[in-house]
Each structure stands twice: as C-alpha cells, then as structure tokens.
Length: 79
Image (cartoon, rainbow, N blue to C red; front, side, top):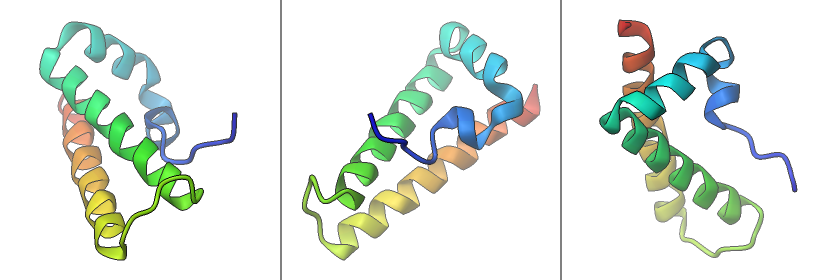
C-alpha cells in the first residue's frame, strides 16, 4: 500500500491516543474523523490518477479536508 499523506495520525502525531479515545467515545468526533478519512482518500485517488476529477472538484475536496481538519483540531485542543 502506498503512503497516503494527511492521515490524522500524521497531522496530529502528539494526539493519536486522544483521537482514538474520542473516536470511540464521541459520536460527533467519530463522524468528523470518518468524513476526513473519506475525503482524504478521495483526494489521494485523484492525485494518483485512479479517479478523474475536475480542478474545481479537487479544490473543493481540499477545502473540505481543511475545514474538517480545523474542526477536529478544535476538539483536540479544547480538551
């Protein structure tokens, strides 16, 4: 399997345990993390040339990933 940048463990290496705990104890956080993973994988497939997408679609996905990351970061820094 190829290396996929922007995984949550890479984005927040100091909070891996907190991410794991929140995913199992907070339904909203788990949904955010799942959505982040889904969007991140789609971006990776596009960048790898496996899935075609317009520039607009690619940019929209990157913006979505950024917004999800910001929301996840809020959870991680508020606790």
